[in-house]
Length: 199
Image 1 (cartoon, helix red, strand yellow):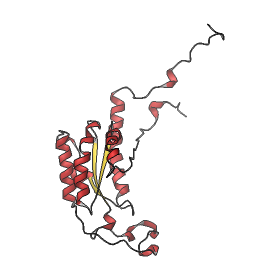
Image 2 (cartoon, helix red, strand yellow; image 1 turned 45 degrees about the vertical axis):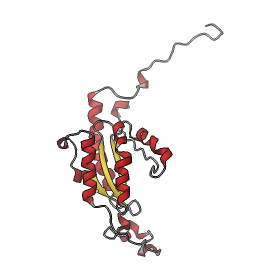
Image 3 (cartoon, one colour; image 1 turned 60 degrees about the vertical axis):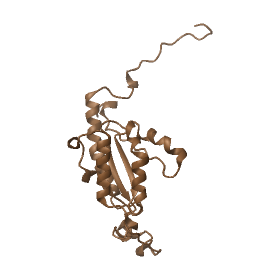
Image 4 (tube, one colour; image 1 turned 120 degrees about the vertical axis):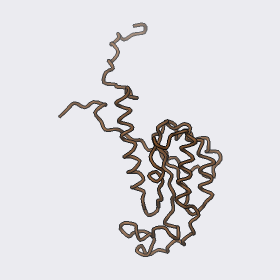
């Protein structure tokens, strides 16, 4: 078996999941802390409430300033399970949800207020705001998702897509420069001193 060394381990992808900041003015200043140095940022809105997309743009576009220059941005429309044209709860694996298979009441369906094109437009605004060339970033259609946190619809696809894009960036950065961690195996312990007051 090869000797373990910090450089031989697979890249670590740290996921920071900040609490919901919407509607809580006292926490808005914390948002930039969560984006600082981020390799990927997931911006989420409710497909059934147009105001959520507008607030996302108004409140959180500036937070992207603290992310890395090569940061990936995913625009995610959530709650498609509640949308009239979204996937039903019966799509949930195992059938243990509150839909017909789970024996509970189905949630009322809401009219969709945000279209996928609206998310693509926001993604393109972020690219312009960050002054990035569209040739150098993933296509908007590749970075805009519609999910249901309740049923799990497209959640795995979202994270798998981001991880597939982020890991090569981390590996490239690791190959280009010194590690951003301290190698404690190369440190020598301090010389032993004699016990006493003024040794």
